[in-house]
Length: 487
Image (cartoon, rainbow, N blue to C red; front, top):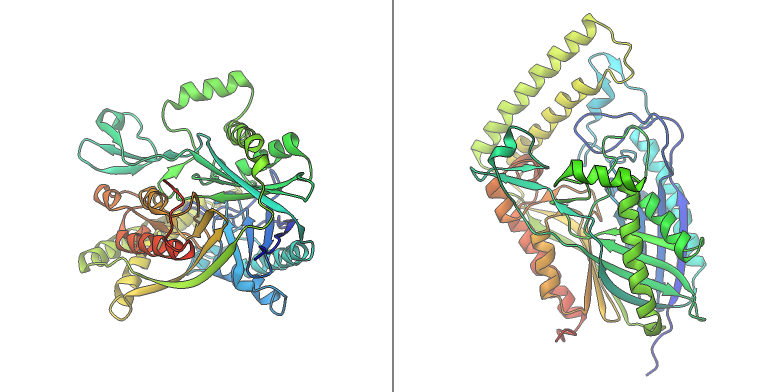
């Protein structure tokens, strides 16, 4: 029986809001003060007639349920299944906040004391993004044309493990600074430098786009007050400079909850080298990614498949919540009270001496947000008495000899490597941040503690992370009929 020919469609739209918005990421509130480079959403539609997927890469810290649902509502009645639109974020910490209180934004942060913060409300940001993204998806789907895919793998050093362990076995996120460096003993976890590439071609064999999957979030500019796509801005520019201005570029972050693209080891020496080269760290990452892609493309060009098998499952998977103790709740209550005390002291200081500083709200907002962070532990402790699991959307795909598997988290690498090792596919693309986010830590990271691996950071803990890994491997084996392609 002849295979069904593949139809491919690309789309792109800018999603940079006009005017000031709340910027996602970090504990302290940031209100945007301009635009460094445009924020983008990019779509790749793959359709065999028997099944389909639409990958949507978004320059955002995460994909809020609000954005996902608003886009899908606008796509109701289309000739494709809106549930088979797979959204995933680049994890830019210089993009608008699009999550509500249950997913990140503390609505109370709109006001410090009795002083209101002036920025676009989050519901308006959601509506703006959803309208543009939905229109772009329709265009990508309508523009489907015959094409083929090829795939390959190489290495690009981008993500580094960001959890450092001291002589007491205590972990901290990011490097230690003097005098704490004297107690540093080792980096906690593994690093993955693989770059998975999916390339699309027209019937004449011309390259039309690339899907680049790397285990690193894009947060080089994580403290910026200017909106930015982070290193993907430079990466897209470099790829298009090398392979054609009309090139489609999908950005995917593989399992990398404990990784960062920021320079941690020997930062002064590496900063010196960047200065000597006349570039910054974002351009350096763009160059590394582009060089890896350039090594892959020539050798896969002869392997283009114009009729790959496509099988796509979408599920709402119930995962066990991270079980909290009374001690966890009591500790969170003490910390929340301490944050409230510091917040009130800062508000009083601001009232006594009105500041002309346009960023006057930073310190107070951090106390406010940390209080809410700790209060989340208390809320979850109560909720677990009646609910032991939480549902999350996950996607699993077979595309010829390769697999894709998504999760909505910042998923620690130990789980990601486990899935790759056990996957039946010749090559496995993991996609994290296909949802709101929140860390899912490995068992060894919980032993070390520290931000990212403490109760307030982890609505889903190691038990849930392992359950997701097991389900992912089982589902991929079903999609591949449990016939490993690897020797």
